Length: 89
Image 1 (cartoon, one colour):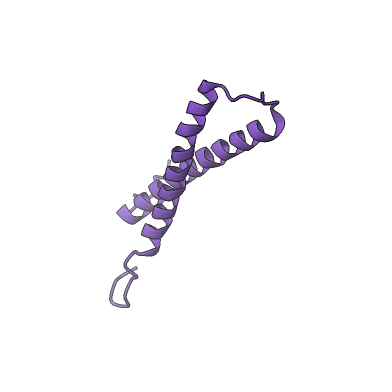
Image 2 (image 1 turned 90 degrees about the vertical axis):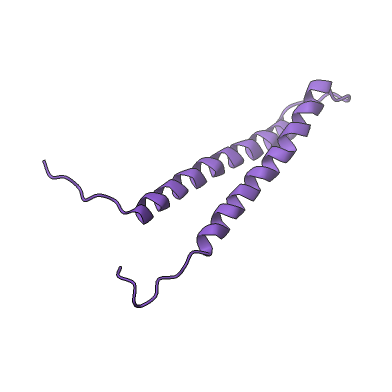
């Protein structure tokens, strides 16, 4: 059985960032999709229940935080040191 070569630290970090970014993106899309579905397709009573009000109070900052984390993750990867011509590949 042929063994694969070991991954470098940069490759491991890149895969980890990709995995974290995908997980947060899926959670963000799921949250927004659920909120939109609840607003558009679920019959709402005229008066909002206290439970629903608390859920909205929790979900709003959560969604903002997830979008901020995704933006920070993308920005941090864009600010990496660019390889110079002296660095080996």
